[in-house]
Image (cartoon, rainbow, N blue to C red; front, side, top):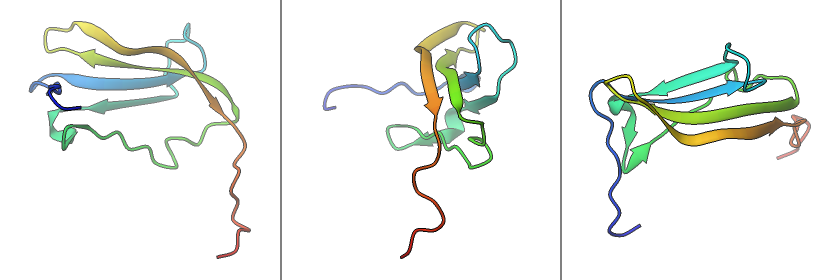
Length: 95
């Protein structure tokens, strides 16, 4: 990505990722926020733990937005389908 500049979050800005079972619902199943202290080299690293992704199999929706210091919400990734399926690798795998 030579020549491209990366956006750096300001002091009171956040990147927000939200996951819901429907775009019409108001409650998040998962909501993560990244601030300027979460910068990792040229970008921001979002880490999901096992607890974060402990959702039943099914179809969900997520999006990512920039919340500016003045309250403006800028969509980075619009509503996108996320499908959680049964685990492929299981604990019975031998090393």
